[in-house]
Length: 331
Image 1 (cartoon, helix red, strand yellow):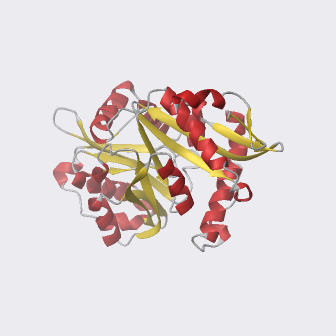
Image 2: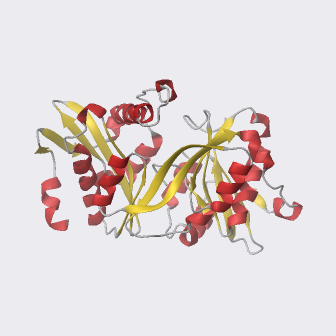
């Protein structure tokens, strides 16, 4: 791979298609490509109504965050002056994660997806990444592409959704535990504490993401600490007070990380108690298939599986049996 990096420099022409590094001012067109590709997927593969995925040009704040933190891992494919696909990814420690890879349906079969993947991966390898990973859709073609790039399925990732009031059906909080739940803030002390827990559960720190979630996204983070002040668990969730688009429904829960799998349920129940006034709304999660504590509890509380993807990686890492991702872009 390293020996082939030179062909990825600048605006290189491949099969009549130009590739260049993506910029923040490309975010609107990247969003159109993403929503168009997702709409095609859910209609043709899953049989859903097209209205379930409206096409939008609203820039993704998560993509903006990724481009800002890893500008050389974001690529745009252009054919006849028209953007037709993009890839974005990031590196945290030895981990490279492919945040997004989308190609317009009419551009399939031209090798665009493979080229975009290789360019993003090359940037990750240059930064010292040794683990490759992606949260794939259920599309066999996409999974085959990732397998050829050295990533294999590790476990299913379930998209779960349901009424917010269903969180109230989870086991009630013990009074002693309830007293230890506090709300995190955007401070150096909290960022350090959250990062310390990440090192155990996620295998590496990602302080920049915590600043993004607590700051730009306006998500709420609650946490449980032990007697010495060390964090035992944390959980993020969106609400009407979050910044757009996180103030809309369905509300998002994640990431959630806990030293003990059962502590996930305690924080999910606490979130349910805090959003009781929004009981008519819906919430959504991405639950790893190996996180049976959260998966079985949520299904038992009446939540339903909306879709199933695959978490794929070149080798295993982290403790996903006690982790709920933020989503497909930032994991």
